[in-house]
Length: 173
Image (cartoon, rainbow, N blue to C red; front, side, top):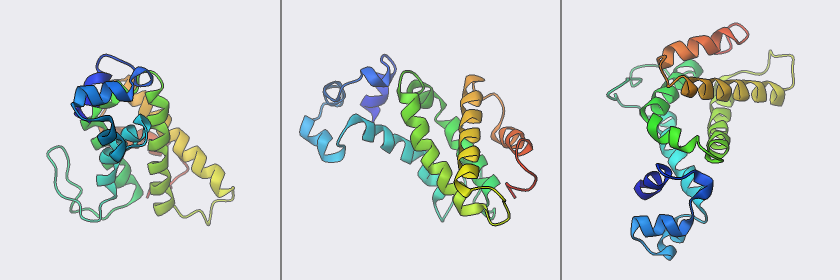
């Protein structure tokens, strides 16, 4: 993964080849394919390392934030996720060049869907569940892209407060 990030510093994701990755990492092609079927799955692994911690049942205090003592809910989970994105800002900005951004957002959306489905009760919403989910996911992803375009200057709590203001009352509670 270190070799992958080093290549992203000079090339867009879509221009990087598996051969370049293995040469930079000084491993055999078969070693790469033992772990990943394609470079897109390497990107998926990068994303999962960013997102998986938020889904952990046992959260620990971290340097920039501490959610270990809070009861998990959607709002706290989204704030936590933004802290991890901000910590990985340099790497994510590298991914946001070329078609890496679209692939990153697709993986990101899958994790968002899990969070929204875990915490939101769709029973009282008089709209198709899949439409509401699509709206929440696309809005959140767009906001994250906007946040990155602003160099993540706002802190994660402020960003979620903006997001919360755009949603029907109490959906993030």
